[in-house]
Length: 162
Image (cartoon, rainbow, N blue to C red; front, side):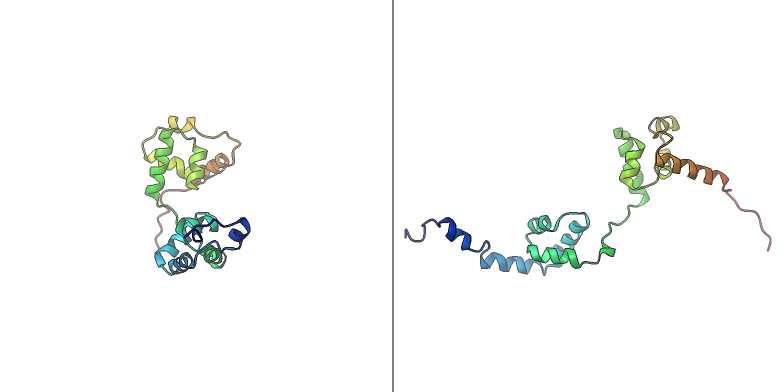
């Protein structure tokens, strides 16, 4: 009985494999579950490193690394938010005190779009103008260019007969 419970020396412990055969087979079976593989792909798209994904989902590290390397990078994109979600996020960020540059960066939208969202959410132009970036900021330059473009654009085209 004392043989079974005898401690291993450092050299004996180093020669032992880290995973038992049972653990290894469980990890190999998990990689065939579609929901787990989809979750792994989503986490890789969000920027998680392969080692962390493997640990989090209890997958084989080599499998996640090959998935990370072989999966088509063209399809590694997060879908765009719809306008309602973006407007709601802009509203929440603005109420929490964030400036417009931060909101535009989070939404990955131009300043014109962010200001339009906030105007639709019934914020006054005075409240919005207090948080505008300085005139030399690239977002502000693009905003002025867009405003000039919209001013030149007519609402209705010429009436054409044939």
